Image (tube, rainbow, N blue to C red; front, side, top):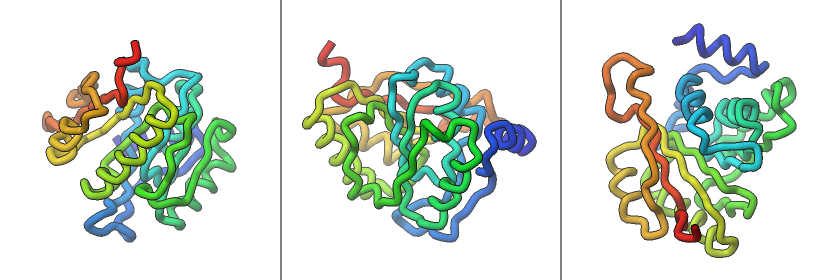
Length: 203
């Protein structure tokens, strides 16, 4: 697994491996990049295309942003509250193969106003349920101000995340991308849940 991660980092001309919990607390969780095999599965699912803009909460060193931008030709915005981590993403941006389609913002997720152009949002357990509730408020506000299809992707979701998401009126459960076969152990959390905000109600 480690060799595969290193291989992709070298191919994309970035450095994103390794876990970092130096800034973690009860509200903001450690930096741990999404495995490339999971990002490949998400990219191949067909939900993200060239015309989309992906917002990556808790982007860390920018792995998901660089990979998805390269693989799908989408644009991406990484939001990160840890200045030191964001600086690593910006450093990666200087060498990355797809740097022109990525941007990074230093901000607390709960205060970040979701841009109108964002129509895809990615989460890998970046923060607590308390912060997620506030973030969902920002997402809903953006949707009401500029109605559009917004798809939300939750990788390795916790039970409390899932329970909460199922109660949000503006969200509709759309799909589950199974990732259990990518890792040993058969962990049921190895999946990406896909929700639509405002859903295809407009369809």
